[in-house]
Image (cartoon, rainbow, N blue to C red):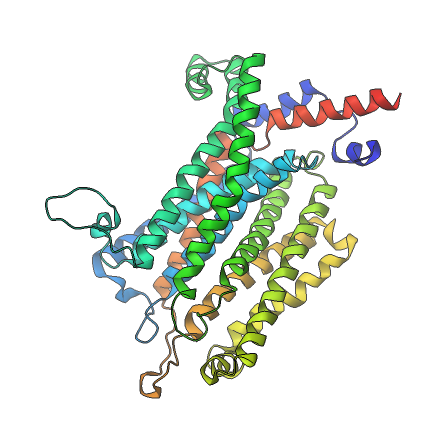
Length: 454
């Protein structure tokens, strides 16, 4: 990476002191910005709506959802897979950028890690809501009990539980460990005794010593290396919920890598979306620059192309296999009652993302913001059409039928977005939205390059 390229990622006047003052000031300021307070109020209202809808589902049953035989998996599973995809991509993005030593990682890594943490929470809640009897969710746990009840290991529900639980624990540890140096900075800069104690407890005795940094770099590298196989395996397990069945439309061996690519596509789109919002809400346009948006746009385009290849591979497999039922599924997707979902997905994930070939589009915050939204809508529609179109017209015509979402489906989905935003906004008020120690490393590398150039 040349010196000029690296300098474009950081403002010329940015130093260790003023960078720390700006980022830490967002957390330690006695009063939050007006934009943050308005967004937090809206997100809180949507989170309350989500809690109300969950209470209604738990008290009245999953009959509130628009599911009906033969479509027994509806919005809960669609949203579970969608949120899991966003969550898995967050940790993998941060880990891969760390392992490859990308200089543009610093301003976006924390957003990706926080996004992963709160998206997996939303996915877990939806998975519980799908059970129908959430009070019996402990039956998925392998714990000793007097009734000799053990999980049914052949059930995808058990696979999902272990996949989500494993990823939740790993993501929590990865995020918290990356925050240790920044918690110590907040502890040292806090003026009130209560904040000093609060961040002191979170910092776990961090003293900024050479030994602490050596251990930190070692553990951070190990966690980043472990993140990739965990994310790939967990995403693969989720995709196997569908692929191990013999249902036409589900039974594809390409699903594990296909779902990983889709997760990374929606993940980079969500990071780009959060980056645009963050730089506008907190005035960080000089730290999260248009060049960072350019890199995020390139990664969106890369994984969109992989997803597009997966679409072609699916269609080719359905045709080349000679299986009439596989072919019928795709003809139904294009012309049947759910055709608008498939064609809308095609527009969002195939056509619109081609705009990212243009540098002016990638560097435009408004364009990236719009494409990030359409990409996430497209990835949600992808899960929707896979789950609905594959089962609504099965082998026996007498069982054919359609299922349409209800108002409760829509309200719960809207509320989950509010829960995600609520947690994320609370997080950026309690912890630095940009990793200060990663920014210091970037500034230090820039200084070293200048010295070598001189």
